[in-house]
Image (cartoon, rainbow, N blue to C red; front, top):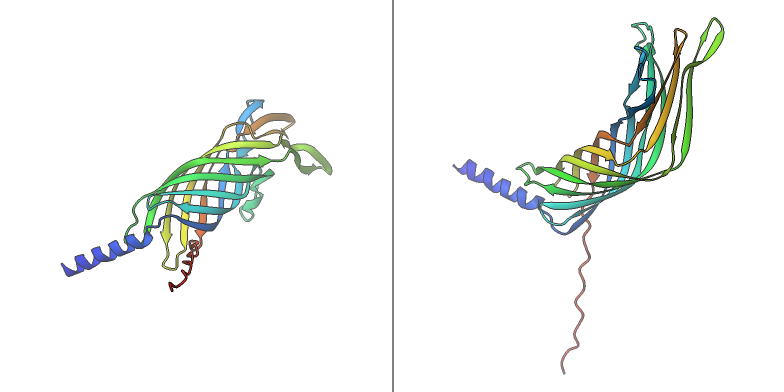
Length: 257
């Protein structure tokens, strides 16, 4: 019975420790995601060796967090997010060199990322860890850019420039995204918080386009793809100790004569 009461008291103490009201924190966030692109035109039949893959993207943000009370908080970020297109052709390869299995192209763009999200925080457990669920939006800004990529092979001493090539472009401007997140975080005794979140992003309009061409066995294929910036990814954020406002000094009243 004493052990049960002691455990309950420890849990209550940790719960009280983790509850914060009207506090600000700065944090740094790093993550990665798989950016999706979808077929948009051109030849609908593709060669079996052709692969249109998710784009391996990354992101880094500097975050500001405001905890309104034990259950609600808001975050705002400023950082960079990558997106693009990734293609490959399967090749005959040696089992001693599995990296030669694919000949690939990668076209990468960078966007300025300004996310704003609101989270609901569930009650922490005895280890001062808790679940969060949140939603919001992000405004991305991209510069107008066109990227030309090619993968060439030599057959009988003659370079085949049509083997695999792509032209990818973005018009530039601002693009709005909707975001949803499920997160788990742990608060440490020194005041820091480590947050791991699964992030889902949906773009509201076309962000970039790409045309890919390749020639296999004397036949040339051409496909068009587009992306709205849709992705699912993982984010790791470390929030530093909360900022504390300096107490206002009470004015000294003159002594009465």
